Length: 256
Image (cartoon, rainbow, N blue to C red):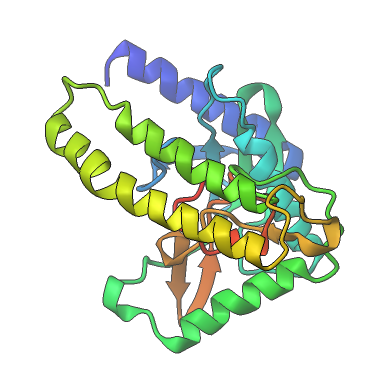
């Protein structure tokens, strides 16, 4: 380990100890980086009290105004208040460091062909449980859509982002052909049909959903963000969670 790596490790241990001290969880004696976490740094923290914990240091960029720490923390607090235990317990946070301490959830990832009806039932039950008594007072989920026009504009923005790929990027020419020759015509057709059907049924494209029509959404929800242990499922990663249209709950990789 070089000097820079040693300083980074000392900084993380100090951060972990500040958080464990607030919860009476003992002192952090070892840390190891956990797999996964595209944008964030996630560590297993072993303590002298013998109970492993998780330290999550959230991605932060001035160009991206999303507060991932607040979104996940508020969602997990609400879940635990509702008696939901299929998620990590929020223990302590430090906003200035964009970091939080959570309970450690044991388990393994489900293999792609391993998902069964009982797992789908567990996911549905989880959605129902977190929405029991939902008061609509959490912030909007990342890329939340509250009207038909919101949904249409979101897809349009994503398509334009694809069309603006760096021409020097690998396979840029093939990507451009895919966007303009395949995706753009398909999307224009789908958008046109959606607008015509909405208007034919007397729907206002711009009418926002009322609070009673919204739900609490985990956002980036699916079995890619779940662990199984002794047949029980636990769900992870709620940094894009919040209020949303119920139609958006199972939209995979919604916040990316």
